[in-house]
Image (tube, rainbow, N blue to C red):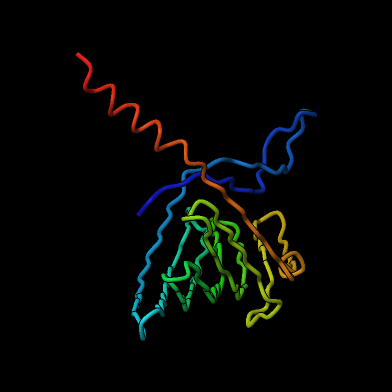
Length: 200
């Protein structure tokens, strides 16, 4: 059992700045109880000569409580990939799927936020000139198996609110490319240090 800090919103009765007795809204930082239990299983297995498959499944249950206020929820995470590596021609290709149910689940005594999304990515790399030049690239396909919604809920004695946003709107047709070049100055530096070690 862990502890964390969050604001508790309550309706209280007392003396107001106008010097009359009445109700007011109080936001008070509190030290609430937090629990996160999880379990996972994974598989990594080479196939044929140049292929490697990997899969991982993880489940977490999170709970936050303070006095009569409490929220809890479960989080499923799944990822898998197939990797092809050609050592002779120095290139590789990876097809990867990542799925999240209630990804980035966050719970507090008076609120909870969740996200349900996934992505499929194809990436690859190739090296040239004795591995001095490397090119990496990837593409996230506009194909999804989950809803893509981020939801947030707040429930206090003063107010209650709900929100829902489409996260896939910012993650469609994503592409990246990275180019790196490694200069060969390191060899001359190492040789110079080696020669200096023989001086008296």
